[in-house]
Image 1 (cartoon, rainbow, N blue to C red):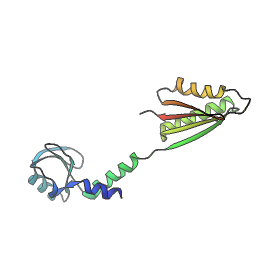
Image 2: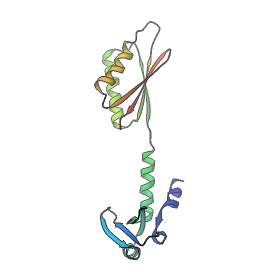
Image 3: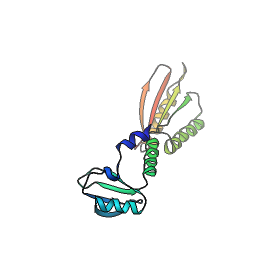
Image 4: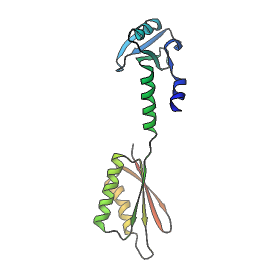
Length: 166
């Protein structure tokens, strides 16, 4: 479905309506400004297509294989749409070394693959909020350059959403 939508938007070969084009090769090296007839001849000599990349006064065109170009665009669009969310649950009775290990693993996850991590701290009736404050301060203090921390309160749970900084 995605490739059909993209194929409709791509202008190539005889459908390009310009007198001159700025020409690029497969490796995106600038070849110069050519008339549309010369650019079409160059693309036919290489057994490839002349594909319009951008619409400007002098449109930018690339000499490439049409199917490969569509494949690359589809692949990049699919990779851009990936959003990985994880949730990690912590109990307020978790010991400090285990807690630090979990928080370090969260930082590794954010660096590698995740865009959002939800940390849920489950509190019992008689437990204090020391763990929640420790987790909050850990991300705000030590790793402020890596994450943004937002807090949301509930009766039984305390949730922190940590986003990857762009």
